[in-house]
Amino acid sequence: MTERRESRATKAAVLSGAIVVLLLTIILFLTPPADGYEFSVYRALPVEFWILAISGLVLCQLLIARYALWDSDSPLSWRYGVVIALSIETLILSLPYFRGYQAYDRADVLTHIGYIRSIHQFGTPPAKDIYPNIHILTLSLSYATGIEPLHIINTISIVVPVFSVLAWYAFVVRLYDRQRALLTLPFAILFVAGSAYTNPSPYTQISLVVPFVLYLFVRERQTRSIPSRIALAVAAVSLVIYHPIITLFVSGILLAYVLVDGVLSVHSGIEGSRASVGRAATLQLLVGLFLSWYHGFGPIIRRSREAIRGLLGTSGGQSPLGQYSSAVSSTSPELSDILVIGFVEYGVSAIFLAIGGLYLLTKVYDGLVGQFDTDVYEGTFVVSFVAFAGASVCFLVFDLIVGFGRPLLYVNIFGTLLAGPLFYWAYQRLDFRRGITLFLCVTLVAYSTFGVLSLYHSPLKAEPGRHVTDAELEGSQWLLDHRNRFFGTVEYGITLWRFGDTYFGVTKDSRREIVDPESPLPPPSFGYRDNDTLGSSYQTNQYMVITTKGREFYPSVYPDYRDQWRFHDRDFEQLRRDPTTSQVYHNGNVNVYRINGTG
Image (cartoon, rainbow, N blue to C red):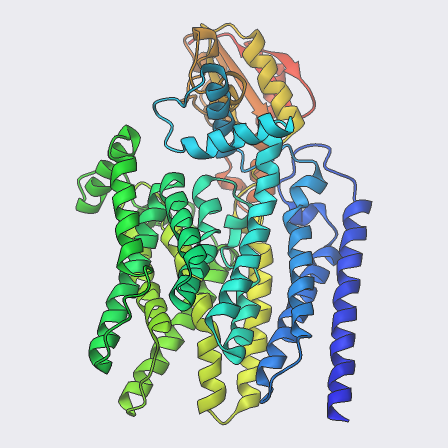
């Protein structure tokens, strides 16, 4: 009778999940695509879509976790939860396609297209290209399929995150026993890396592949098979040649494994097996390849030098912590706004920091009562978790060129791997199972909510959407084709030199193709606080580009802080009447003005 009741409950959960997927698909197809720039994809779709998506993910997570509490081998029905969750996530990751965005993440993608264009024009990567393999691979796929490189990047941006979720599944199932695996999977199959799933830059994309590399490493250690060793070697080489920081991070993980394995071997008195190549050999391969591949890359050497200066405090830059402190002190935001932005931006990381911290406390408790026990993998995860948490603090406090979010991503990864062991320990050692189950459910609901809401940039995180529209591509190309190259450029809501890279490549053939990467913003209120005309602020003629993102930035992102807006509606009205400015292009989302400098 109990098994029949469980079967009915499982069928009801699976049917509910399938209905959620169907409803989400219907909503996506019935919602018209964007007709211009959208500050938030969360506002573009009905709220029912997001409620259904989060509810469906939580349902799938609970469907998986409930089987972990069975004392005997559970049926494989929990796999339906994995399939439904993957379907929901694929739909959410495909939102840029359904919304009609030309590209997502407006900064890096456009310049990467420029590198690909330069390789196509000259047959070799530019000297300053530190990601030549990615660009050559994309161009090769373009040649083979006849598809534009931008569309290939958009496709890869969906394929890689879906592959990452599948890799998480394979890794967790390979790594843990049944109960630990089923308690870890609800965390692993969701958006562990947050907004990295929608960022097509090389670092985030290759970071999403790290779970697959860890899977290959564990598989090689367990099977000692030749195919596993070959796959691990290929993955290690790919990591090195696709991004330098990934090599350093993965080398640190392997070093932690070697140290933990050595300590456990000494403690148990059993020497580790030398039949596997997965330990020191892989670490040596990574380090050797890194030194041989990047020793001649000028940009890498310069960035490394700048990072060392930042760590020593001799650079002129400001740390992320200093930037946040300056922003808070200068704008005096409400505490509620800070909390909302903080939870949406870093809610997922906060959950995994809490999980990792609680797991450390359980190990301390076990040590105090004389029941301390761990294996080499969990020991490696603990050491890596602590190391990357410490690295995140360093990247936050010091100016190390890149933000602290890069090591923080790996805090999420190892916090995920400690989630299953933590709840398994709680169920085995503590008596109040209902309280633990309630805590697990609350954690999964919070994790799903933060994971979905932090996936895309939006005013929820005090950032506008990062997609590129058709109008921006058309407007920027018109200006670059028709401009007087002796005029300067002022821009607001667009980074014109990135679009110049897309059209002309990063290796410029003529002065006509060069776009100043230091194009300034217009003066506050277009200078009308001190002058009657905008032209009075400039001594030479200028072009000024203003997009929808610029015009509506403050009302959309900071509606409650009008006294701190850089531009107001009255400034744009006065701009239309300004005798020193004339509108030379307009397509509904992009305005191009010519400014007659009279200063």
